[in-house]
Image (cartoon, rainbow, N blue to C red; front, top):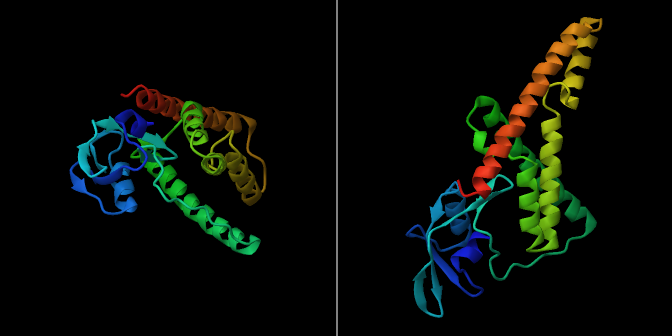
Length: 210
């Protein structure tokens, strides 16, 4: 992880990111996320001594740039089934909105860097597996939800495209011609492939440090 590469150790206290003081973990997290993959200088206090770690690039995981460390004192709370279900529903909705916004930016042409490929998925899941199995399960859930929403885009041959065509045919009262169906499918496949290669390019650039 970037944190390990920079030399961050257990017990270190992060006091600044890129010379901007940070007093809470939230401030640290926001500063790292805003780096957008550029090298960051993390300032720490280790055994009473102020140290600036060498510039290190953050990595992208689940749509966010991270440094790859867990704050000390993280406590996992246990909830009863009803409370856990409610919290899971809330978190799922929040993530769904975030993914929806990301997909909207992709359609608008401003979210190119948000796209990832199977290479990025494997990298993110392997990074999570090295920390804690709960992080790994969370990443897997996020990936599954992202793929489910992507599959609902109204493009053939995705399920969303089939749903859109079925609704259109139902409103129209008759089926769409085979030639039209095939032409639309070609366009959809081309867009999906384009999305894949954009994601692959992003992952290669990120993993390769580009």
